[in-house]
Structures are given as structure tokens and as C-alpha cells.
Amino acid sequence: AEHLTQEGSVVNSSRDITVEPGRLATISLEGHASEMSIGVVYLIEPQGFDSGGNPVEVDAWNYSVIGPSEDAVAVYPDGTVFEPDVTGLHKIRVSAAGRVSEINVEVFAGVPVSLIVTSTEGEALVLVTGYSISLEVIGLDYYGNEDPSDANWTISAGYGTVVEASSGGVGHYVYTADGIGYVELTAIHGEAVGTLIVEVLPGELDHLEVILPDRAAQGETVEFELRGFDLSENEVSIHPCAATIVTDLGEANCKDGIWSLKLEEEGDQMIVRA
Image 1: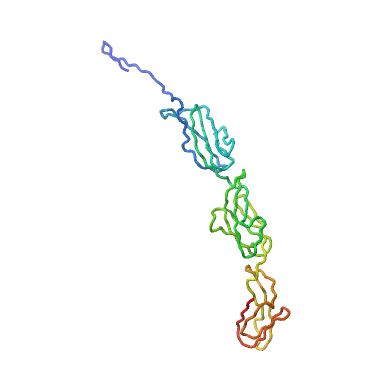
Image 2: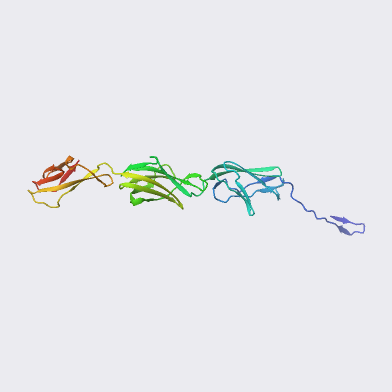
């Protein structure tokens, strides 16, 4: 302030005033994520403001969580952390000096530590070779929360293939059997592993194979063999004489399970049907 004296001189005076923040009026949780996965660090960092929007230092915050996880807030020297152990919607509530702020956080399962492989056919799986079944892979995190999981596959003895299903989304696969015997299907995701045992049975007769000499002279009678195979080329037991042989090379006959063909005409066509 300035003051003019009678002598005409000017006198100045001043005073320093320190403006302190007012009382806590609002609590902000702006910038906090609305989704998280179990096992990921989620820091809770509230900010206090007075009625003029000036930051207010708060000596002590109060925390509570409404949701599936109990005692989900941990206070460490370097910060306060939200540590849920159950999936689902949680409400984090922060309060101080009678003021409250809340945020909703959807919690998802963490990284799987083990896998469960299931099928629409149940647990005792028996499958005819050449046919397919649907599989589903479920990941379990450290706390046992379930979540569909993608996976890489190994198949014992290479008996069959596993491919992603055309529908169903993540974790849905289709196994097509091959070979005969017990097959172990192993799903792998990171360090997590799950297995399913399938018994693969021989299939029904799908086609026949004729085994006869490559060359023979007209007028000769040659013996030949019939073998049956299923859809996956596994040999199937058959009664050879139950087959019907159609050929324009001559007359075919079966006796005691052995076929013979008298070559009456020249040619190379032989048709077999069961």
C-alpha cells in the first residue's frame, strides 16, 4: 500500500499473506482402470481437493471394497494396492474427513497355472477312429478362478489332430481321432498344462484292398487276398468270402477264405465291393 505524507513523500507498506488449502471437499479417483486381471498390480492413488479445486494433503485414507473378494486392499510402504482373489465386479470406496469417492472395477481371472480339458462326451471317452469330438479348455489361476483358455496341443503317438472349433470362441477345439489305442491329449498354455485320455477304437469297414500278383498269363488261375480297412486305414477283420468280386478278367471264386481268379480275358480292371 502507498501513503502520501504532508511533506509530499510517499510511504510504502506491505504484508505477506500465505494462503493455505481449504478443507477437504472432494476425493478424486480419476485415472484408475475399470478392469483388471488377478495378479496385476493395481495401485489406489486418491487425490483430495478443497472447494476451490486446490490439492489437499490427507494424512490418512480409509479404504473398503464391496464385492466378491474380502480384505482386498493392502497397504505397503510404497503404496496402497487392490489385491482381489475372486473374479467379478468390485466397488472400491475411499473416504477421509467425511468425504467419499467410489470406483467400479471388473476383475478377471489371472494367468492360468493349470488347465482343465473337458469334452461334450464326458470323462470316460471312447471314440471310433476317424470321428471327432468337441473339446473345451478352462484355465485356473492361482486362486482357482476359471476362464476359457487358448492352448497349444501335443497328441501321444500322433494319433489324430486338434484344431480350433469354428464356433464357441476361446477355448473350444475339435479332436479328430486316428490310430487305435489310448491317446493322451495335452493342452499347454504357458506353464499351465491339462490332459485328457481318449480310447480310440477301430472303425467299421470302410473299403477293401485287393492283393494279387502284378502279372499273370491268360488261362492261369491266381490266388489273391482281400483286406479290409476303416476310415483311418486301420485294418479291420473281415470274412473274405463275404465279399463280392466283379471283374471282366475271368471267374473269381472263394473257398476256405482264399480267393482265386481264372484269367480268361485280357485286361486290367478289377472292381471289388463288400
